[in-house]
Each structure stands twice: as structure tokens, then as C-alpha cells.
Amino acid sequence: MQSSIGIDQYIDFIAIDLGLSKATQATYKTQVVFFIKYLYKHNISLNEFKEDDIHAYIREKQHEDDLTSCSVNLVLSAIKSFVRYQLAEKIRSDDPFLNYEFPKLAQRIPKILNNEMMKKILNEPKETDFLEFRDKVLMALLYATGLRSQELISLKFQNVNFEEGFLRVIGKGDKERMVPIASVVMDLFKKYIAFAKSKGIVFKGQYLFPSSRSDSHITRQTLFYRIRNYAKRAGLNPLPSAHIFRHAFATHLLNNGADLATVQMLLGHSSLNTTEIYTHVASKRLHEVFKKAHPRS
Image (cartoon, rainbow, N blue to C red; front, side):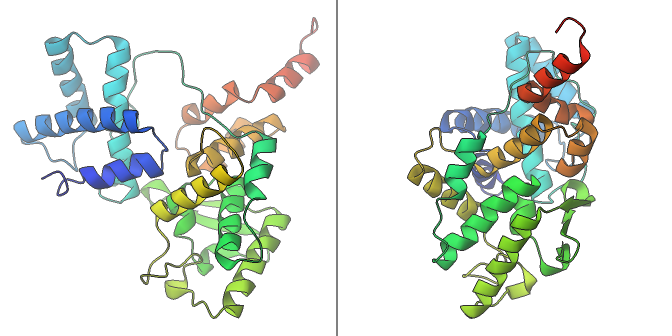
């Protein structure tokens, strides 16, 4: 039953795409299973439940278990991660959390790789080995564009404007956005394509990162484990996930003067509120603005 409702695939998603710990995976799985049982009990579609259904579930949980705000947030975070999985896999197209207000708590600040850590992991792959060079390009693109892992691995030739240095990205809800690529990363990208062709590698389905086992692209699992491998070699601890590169992309942009609205657009966030969390880690930029703007600084 669990496999049929996507629990196993959901666990892969929160482990690989979101980089959650095993303890958090277990907690989220428990909460999602409870929520799914509630949906079945009330004859609510697993793939079509609405914001009102989530509110009703939380009211029932609070009545039965007398949950604190922190516990409510945990339950909601688990359900939201399940919705993110459904959206990523295109199981559903609407987001019931789009206008959902969580109980007010201190915001969790995303973990990021600093500049030195980023240099270490990006320099780890050997450029003479094709697979390692491919991985170098994957990680460089993650950091240079802030793409989600699924957006990256599913890139096709038609999504890349090599002359202008832009990617056309199809994100959540099939929303399209244009993301620029720095010339140094674009040069690396072109070198990868030439390297692949010299090795006789066929870009099946025109995917830029094709799978060797199917006509599709490499999987999120492959990306996850390859990143972990280079992180270990570079001596990084804790080991990063693909999503950490996205956090670093946003934070480093803000630290170097980018405005929040631009970062929101580049990340493909539907709400500026989602992007605002990065202002808490972009301390360098905040201090510079304070020193310039405040008369008593």
C-alpha cells in the first residue's frame, strides 16, 4: 500500500532533493501516513486535497492531541514536503499551501556552503575523467543558477541559449523563467558537450545530462550521491545536498548586492515571503547597508 500511494518515492524525494536527515525522514513519514489515513477516512482524494482539508486535519489533531504551535508546525512541514513531492513529480498542479499561514515561530535559517567550501567541492572532480567532469558541470550550474535538482537534470538543448548565456527553466506549476549563466560556467558547459561528443556519448532525447540506462536523464538519486562523494573527498561536514547549492546561490547574491525581488525571480519563488528567509543569512550585505544608511553606524 505504501508504495502505491508514493510513500517510498516521497522518502527518496525528502532525502535526496531536500537533504533531510534520517531522523527527520522518519518523523515526516509518520506524519504523512497519519494525514493520508485521515484523507482516506473522509473520502478525500490524496492528490486533490485542499487548504480547507489541511485546516480541518490540524483542528482534529489539536483537539485529540493538544498540540503546541511547534508540533503543529512539524505536522504542517511534513504535509507540505509531501505536497512538494507531488508537485515535483507532477502528480498535482495546485499548491494547497500557497496561501497557508503557519503558526508564528522563529524562522529556520537555511544552511549554506561558504565561499571556501564551495571552491573545495567544485575543484574536487577531475576534469580528465568524463563522469567527474560532468559532475563538475552539474555542481557549477547548481551554484551558478540556483536551479532545483529536478530542473537541472531535466534540462534539454532547447532550454539553453548558448549565444546569450541564458537557461529557459520550466519550474513548479510549469512556470517558465529565464536564468542567466556566467560566461565562465557557460564555457565549462560547452566544454562538457564537446567532451561528451568526443566520447561518442549520445544525448538521448536531447537531455543535456542523459542516463546511461534509459532514454531519460540522470536521476536525482545519482546527483545526490555524486555530490556526497565529492563532499566527502573535500572533507566537508556535514555533507551537503543539491539544495544547499541553491541556498548558497541566493545568499551569496544578496551578500554581493542583489535585491530580493531579483533573487525571487531567479529562484522561481511564487512569493517574496519564501525568498525573505535568505536575508537572515546574508549578514555581510545587511551590515554594509546598515553602515552606509544609518547616521549612528
